[in-house]
Image (cartoon, rainbow, N blue to C red; front, top):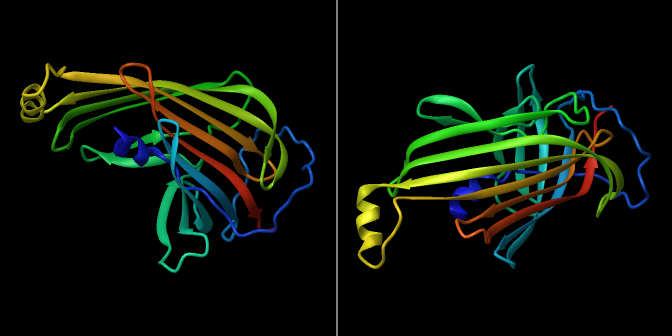
Length: 235
């Protein structure tokens, strides 16, 4: 479950001057224009239950922008390893190839971000792992309004998007037999998900994000959060 949830975590970051003063409020929900060289930096925290298991700072820099795709590099801040070349949809949606087809698996933004707007992301994966015969994911996103948010990069009047959803996993027969040898394991297990994104138009990205995954008992299994620490936009 934690490995699957971790794959959902969207990469985030930047190289920029740290801003501590409040940023003037803006409520423009329209789609921004991104440019090669735009960059963001985030502090990313991973929790298992309530225990913090890692905290890193990541940088993301746009390398190329087309009508449909954002191409970017991602690296650990100050790290010596090579940057990863990645891509996202034109609205920072996350796309994966599922059963031979490209599908959207995470879409935190859907412009224009008008209050009350909602959209749904649903997809299935057949035999994604040796132990899982099927995975089903469903999330409903809603623009709930605006909030003042304080993060290391400053204070922002942000547009808040929330997403609530469900996940379901069906075990492979071999995994089910192995699990049942020790206990009466269910063939299908499921739980819920919660996500929230605080998008600041002047930053052209979210300044805070939270993704939580709950198991079949309703207990929070994992939590991933990110906070903007710096950003830089091309003129």
